Length: 325
Image (cartoon, rainbow, N blue to C red; front, side, top):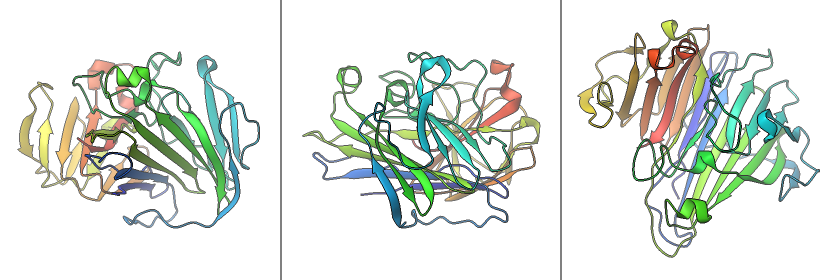
């Protein structure tokens, strides 16, 4: 099993982590797990190791949203558009929300009340269209391809399989399995487990994909993280020397190149894949936050800002994605 992990910490805040591997052999002979963490320590230390082992306490298991008993700090409520969402609250004052539709983390607030994630003003909460913002899933396809853009995981209802308290911090695990909708695009049997844990200064996630089919499959994956920002002041450090696939101007025919800059900025439209990305990046979100993004086993990174293609909101966010593309 490969267990890619991603840890985002802000010298005052931090983002997520992820794990991915492919192909997966039949019948659980291989698994993929991807942890991700958003952190806001002060001061902030950086770690690129796999997720820490935790002592579990106050564990509450659950099989469906209808079950009313959850671990302390975990609750289910009605969100935008009447869609069910999970609210998790740390005893230290941090909060997060996750919609079951798409297993999309749409908010992560640190103890001072500041939300480090961004949801676009054109986001639709109708259970038909993927939620535009937060941390959407790209699985089992990244970008365009034989199935719908970014695959189907962000456009399906996930279920809650577990809630627990780990060393005082709440966590929930969501599950997605194949059905007729997914098989109409990708004819494989699989299980996806997505664990989200809230800590005093971090939000961590782990995505685990298991092949439950009798044949192997391959896939791409990414966490399409939208981070609140002031785009004119945004910079990303750590990508110098990486091979690039620049989708501007032609996304269907990316230009190969090499990143020569110490700091990548966003003066205009940016849509670029960085192959062989390092285990650590530093994001200045232009709002006074330095976010250290650490990961293991995600081999690539993606930077995206739509500029004038989304004139109403492009100045307010940046996407720094850990990916396997």
